[in-house]
Amino acid sequence: MFYRPNIDDHGLQHNPFKAIVSPRPIGWISSVDVDGHANLAPYSFFNAVSDSPPMVMFASTGTKSDQSYSKDSVSNIRNTGEFAVNIVSLALKDQMNGTSGALAAGMDEFEHAGLTKAKCNIVKAPRVSASPAVLECKMFKIVDLPGESNVMVLGEVIGVHLDDTVIVNGIFDITRYTPLARLGYKDYAAISEKFSLDRPK
Image 1 (cartoon, rainbow, N blue to C red):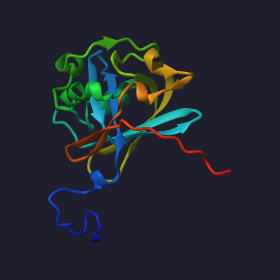
Image 2 (tube, rainbow, N blue to C red):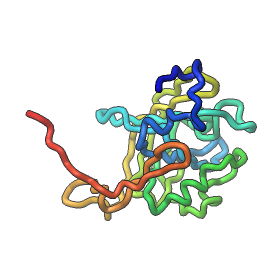
Image 3 (cartoon, one colour):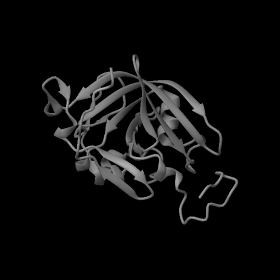
């Protein structure tokens, strides 16, 4: 089949686009508002975009009725210029899902999901203490994308937290935890197999 997004009716029960580009890492974004209230929310439109300097992006779609611009995460980052990305392991899937609800602005998703906070070293946002890795980020740019309330946030990584148990023989070893990925719809995947390939010379 072939269809043109936003032009043709694909005739399927659900929009297949989110399921096509998968698996996608989940950016569990923590931030604070101008009054210091913590916020934590997962975004599956997330990835690293460069390594020197290290940069990440996440995109938010939709709005909240109690925010004048996008959602809590984007509003907080726009006002404070900083955030943290908490990497999601399979062991944290239920807590991650618990923070995906639309709580009122100012409510603490860490407390709602029963998560323990840890302090970041540079940014004011707290981090998920049980996360295998956390990236402290300084906002580089917020880009308004085509479509209603589609926003992309670009950030420079200015601090990195690694759980010592995940460092093996000088590498960050993902076999020491199980990364969680988004597949689309309600579907997720636990990454349990790893293999290596050498680039052609």
